[in-house]
Amino acid sequence: MPREKVKRGAGWNFDNSYARLPSTLFSRVNPTPVRSPALAVLNDSLAVVLGLVPEELQEGEGLAALAGNAIPQGAMPLAQAYAGHQFGYFTMLGDGRAILLGEQMTPSGERVDIQLKGSGTTPYSRRGDGRASLGPMLRECIISEAMYALGIPSTRSLAVVSTGESVWREMEMPGAILTRVADSHLRVGTFQYVNGLGNLEDLRVLAEYTLKRHFPDVEEDGDRYLSLLKEVIKRQAVLIAKWQLVGFVHGVMNTDNMALSGETIDYGPCAFMDAYNPATVFSSIDAEGRYAYGNQPRIATWNLTRFAETLLPLLHADPQTAVKLAEEALSEFPEQSRSHWMAGMRSKLGIFNEEGEDEALIERLLKLMHRYRADYTNTFRELMGNDSAGSALHGTSEFQQWHESWQARLVRQAESRSSSQLLMRKSNPALIPRNHRVEEVLAAAVQQGDYRLMHEFLKALSDPYAHTPEQARYATPPDASAPPYRTFCGT
Ligand code: AMP
Ligand code: MG
Image (tube, rainbow, N blue to C red; front, side):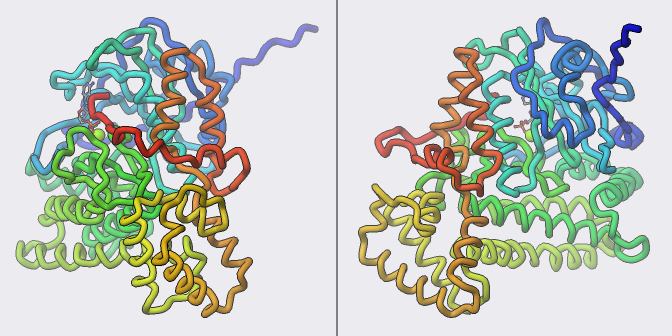
């Protein structure tokens, strides 16, 4: 008897808790279908973790869902409302080109947002076209997946689908849709939006929702909203320290781009630093360096202060007491972030125990790296014994002196040399998504439709602490004569 082909379906298992929130928080809107969707990238391993069937997402209904041409069963598409401070100025925003399909309930019981980015206009699109172009969506896919593999909380990329339609930026570009996966898309700006509406009850509902979704361990009785503030601060302290440790420059730390889950979100003008310099800025529109590498901890404090302001009415009935509570909580951030960073730096140097002089030792190294324009990632690789050819830093007597202090420091701990080496291997990536490499793989993919380089690159980035010989070839910094790398917001 012929066996009938069993259609398994893609495995969507949606809940829609966001759609049950007060209706001011979103607008129900469907994606706008596109002409001829084609799969550019599918993240098979992520699909499996989400309980999805990769083969089913590659064609037919599965692919149509990733293109916004079909609504998967159980989804309730909506665009989220939010506000935000952009470069310091307050604006009403909302998802102008992103649509939340719903929350996928994964086999391991997680709840994650599935969002289509570039899926057409929404009531919040203002003058935008609601679309995205292929290069920047592939770029988000590479960098977000690299961040995840580096151990940095991040939204993830399930798929990129080209639309067969053009978008106009500075010129005509191929259009694409990215399927973004996030613990949630709640932002500082979501609270700013609700606070701005002045409805205290909605603010309370949103705060409860955020607590339930991200901080379920916060006790029922007690200062729940103060705990919310403190927990958000804690997660950002971890996140920003992790950015600093790998040399990541977010580039557009507006309050609408700060996720309350503590994930890195919004890979527009971000980039990784090559030569160490705290003033590093990549974004073409950040002329003042507001979001420079070295400013990120300060900007995070600024953003968290905006978040705290929205919570004031919930913190205490007496406004002055509320402000005092918020200030106390906020004052913790710099020290928290600094101590995560210190712990990370010690690990990068193979140090297990703590000594008062460690900070000075680390600062001395950074100062030398800055002075001699040493590559940030490779300096640490070189300390692990990797090839240091071409590094001006290594030839200097100042560095030799520093190296001796470091070696002497390593002797003052119980752990062996080999454990120290092992710690360094786990703490210093073999590679980061360097800008010139990213551009190279994007050019092949977008201009020639050749995705081989991209797949090789994604593979190398997927295990950055493996230190394989194949990864070494991605370690080369850009040519010193290359013009400074620039990123753009209009993606
Ligand atoms: P971003 O810089 O990506 O955080 O975007 C800032 C705001 O602009 C958000 O509200 C986006 O949804 C919106 N936006 C960005 N690009 C577009 C576009 N092409 N069409 C409509 N809205 C957009
Ligand atoms: Mg954004």
